[in-house]
Image 1 (cartoon, rainbow, N blue to C red):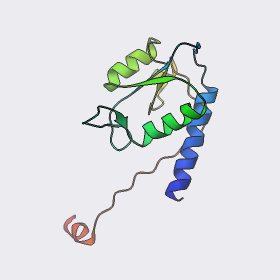
Image 2 (image 1 turned 45 degrees about the vertical axis):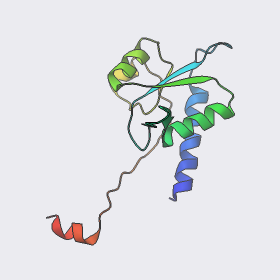
Image 3 (image 1 turned 90 degrees about the vertical axis):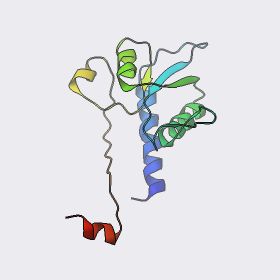
Amino acid sequence: MSLPTKFYLRNIFFLIIFLAFPLKVFPSENIKVCTERSPPYVKVNQETNELKGIDIEIFKNIFNKLKIDYLIEEMPWARCELFLENGIIDVGIKVSKTLEREKFLFYPDVSWESVFVLFTNLETKKNIK
């Protein structure tokens, strides 16, 4: 599967999640979103302190097209999970599904497979036994 196709499918995946997600939306209220730093998916620009990365760009693209106001905060994962559980945060980016989290989070019935591949050059491969 080509890289642009993966990004397209990922955009569709996020769109389905957010359309199916029961949000507490009021006209004057932003959707509160949390995520943790994990380059290249989520990273912080050191000069501007702005959140960047693949996941951030996809999220912004979807919410801007839907004309939904949002505020994304980068924080340690433990705090993000606690805020999600207590309703302080509405949406979490990159939240894996567990039985414990299913008690307080909504997960759509969408399958998504992610494959991680490690590349090396031939010289390095020869040195790894």
